[in-house]
Image 1 (spheres, rainbow, N blue to C red):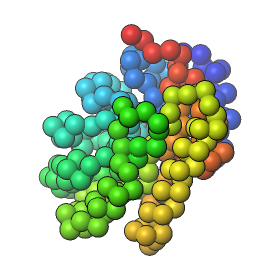
Image 2 (cartoon, rainbow, N blue to C red):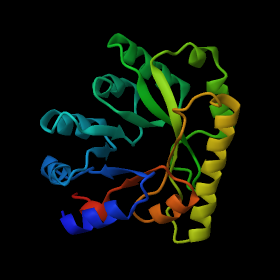
Image 3 (cartoon, rainbow, N blue to C red):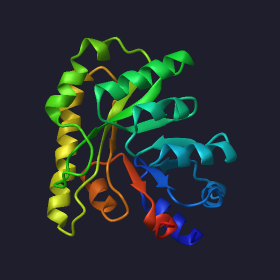
Length: 221
């Protein structure tokens, strides 16, 4: 890890934008290097890798799960996770709520939306989100807190398309806030932007960016 590069990127971000340093495939030692530079918010895509790192790293690290989450893996991260950014179904939300209730935790979550052109990416559309938020099941939940939205732009060199997709996520956020979360001060996060497009994301209103390659170099295979 290039410490100067890490600090250069981190210090270039506006104060209102939270950096989630994505360490997938990188060893715990790399996380520790960044931690010693004063950074404490890290993201992982896979539960197995997340749990393995959490067990051997400092306890005050704020962990975010940013990859697709299967319901049978929820129980492994609920005891310590700070935020699950990839909630894309009512079923997943119900399992998170149930597991969190067992240990009296409230889990911060983001609703993941499909904003990209590629069909392979996960995420809700607006109709699906409305069905969830208007359901009796969701209204009865006491251990899930929806704090905002998350999305991934298309993997493309077309900056206008990327900007358009980020803009659509901001519009989704604004609609949800006015229709369902007008009285919820915690509903304030827009997680969008990765190493190749985070500057556009910030221009369009991101409050969280998820950066890996630009901080740590290419993934270790």
